[in-house]
Amino acid sequence: MRFSFSLPVNLLFGSGAVEEAGKKAALYGKKAFLVTGRGSTKKTGLLDKVRALLAESGVESLVFDQVDPNPTTAMVYEGVKVLRAGGCDFVLGLGGGSMLDAAKLIAFAALNAGDIMDYIFGRKTPGDALPIILIPTTCGTGSEGNSFAVVTDPATGDKKSLRCNSIIARLSIIDPRLMVSLPRPILASVGFDALCHCMEARLSAIGQPVTDLLAREGIGLIYRSLPPLYRGEGTEEDWENLSWASAIGGMCIGIAGVTAPHGIEHPPSGLRNVVHGRGLAALTPVIYARSIAGAPEKFAEISRLLGGADETDCVERIKKFLAGIDLLATLGGEGVKPEDIDWMAENTLKVSAAGINNHPVRFGLEEIKEIYREAL
Image (cartoon, rainbow, N blue to C red; front, side, top):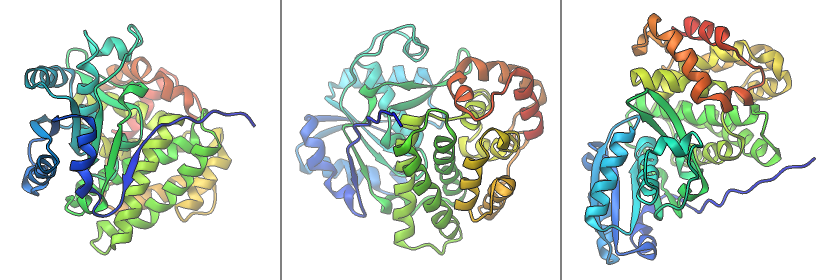
């Protein structure tokens, strides 16, 4: 056995942990660039609460609230302009996965000139980023625990991750109580994304003993906690378990990477703005049904963690789980059109080669097209 594990995450976890945001942030400067979305953190009062906590610790904040789901390079560049004009010292991301990724991308682009896609595709070498603090309000992204940040280039439709250690948060504050107000459809979507992170890390060809251990734990926690929370029957412990599983999933893919479901989902969400978790729900059963022979022992393990028997019922267990959270989806229902298939398949091989290569079986262009057709 030979492997390497290095993931310098700094997590502050627990109910009420957000109360420490001000004094922790003060360690990184006097002015925060607070990246968030247009609605939810304002409606819940969380944005005002975090700004007040910062102010109590002598930290001024400048709010950038122009982040939409599936952040784009154009949004990142606009954020950098506002940050520089405001003279901010560090970036604080507050919200769901798109907000956290946007915060990481803005912190990076502030110190790395030019087209961010050049760094993503390896045409330029990434450098440092401004200090980053992340406070997630959804339990699914995993961005709080890894070196990834996903962005879409509107000029090309390419949706791909920036991956470098400089965008690992200096601190992620994970407070399960911030998740409680999530609308049920969003809870289902982000929760399934977290499950996919753990399943894909377990299946990945570059997984190793530490990620295997974390992935197994994450799968079990999500299986036990997400359905009762979706039904409105969950406990505070369930919220803690789901929030922790989300962080675990992010840590797992930070080392083991993702596999085909994420790789094949990124093109439709980049092209048609498909909700990521719903795209995964449409694609994952189709992909896994074609993948069992490549790693039967791993699929058997996943099935047992989902209440099944062995690899032969793994896909059915996933479908049953999805049905229990009302997340049985199709790509057609999410706005993808048959005429998109050729572009999406070609784009998969362009932007998601690593995920395709990590998968237990290798899909070529024509089989990826077949997967899209079946998921449509």
